[in-house]
Image 1 (tube, rainbow, N blue to C red):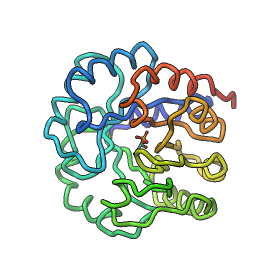
Image 2: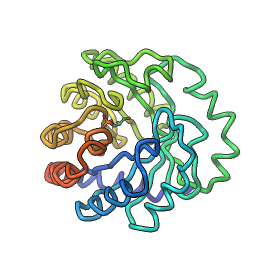
Image 3: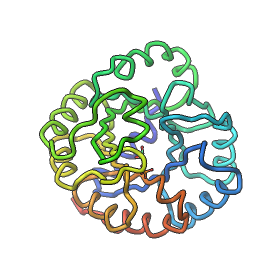
Image 4: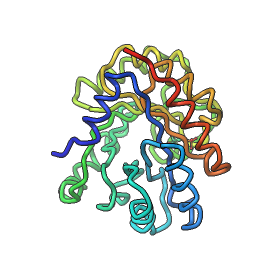
Length: 251
Ligand code: 1GP
C-alpha cells in the first residue's frame, strides 16, 4: 500500500514541523469559492486540503477535487463522512474508524462493506483513529454518528482511547470537536494525548483564531484543520497557516 503522505507526516513530526490543512466541504463551496481558497492557500503555503463532511448532499465531489488538483500541487486528503465520499481524484483517504464511539457501523461495519471499492480506488489509505470530543454544541458529526463524544474535560479517556487506537494499528489520530464547535479541544487534552502516542495527531473543530491554532501545535498537535472559519472569511488562511508554521518545535 502507498505510504507517501504518511511517511512525510512521520518525518515532519520527527523534525517538530507542524502542518496546516484547509477543510473544504463540497456542500458549502462553488467553483468560484474553490478558486479563491486554492489561490490563497498556495500563497499561504497550506500543507493539505481535507475534503469531505459529515453529510455531503451535493454530487460534485469529483469535480471539486479535480478543480483543486488542476490548480495546485497541494495534496488532497479525503475526510469522508461516509463511504460514498471516496474519489479516485484525491491523493489519500483518511480511513476513519470512530474509536471514541460505540457504533459498530462506524468502527468497522461500513469499512467491510466498502473495502473492495476503497482498495480499488488506488488512493493512499491512512488508517485513522477518529475521536469526537464534546465541543459544546450538537454538531452534525455527533448526530450522524449516533455516538456520544468524549467529554471535554475527560483527558484520561481521550488518552486511553488514542493509545488503544494506536496499538490497534491506526497510523494517525484525529481529535475533532466537530465542525463549528463552540469550544475547541483544550490544550490540556492535546498535551495528554500527544505525550502518550507516537502517531501524528490531527486536531480540529471550532478553531477560529490563529492564536488557538498556534497553542494547539505547541501542545502537541501535528496538523491543524480549519473549515468553518475559512468558509466565513477566506483571508484567515494566511494568518492561520503562518501561526501553525511558526509553532515549529525543534526536537
Ligand atoms: C471538523 O475538524 C473539522 O470536522 C474542522 O472544524 O469547521 O469548526 O473548523 P471547523
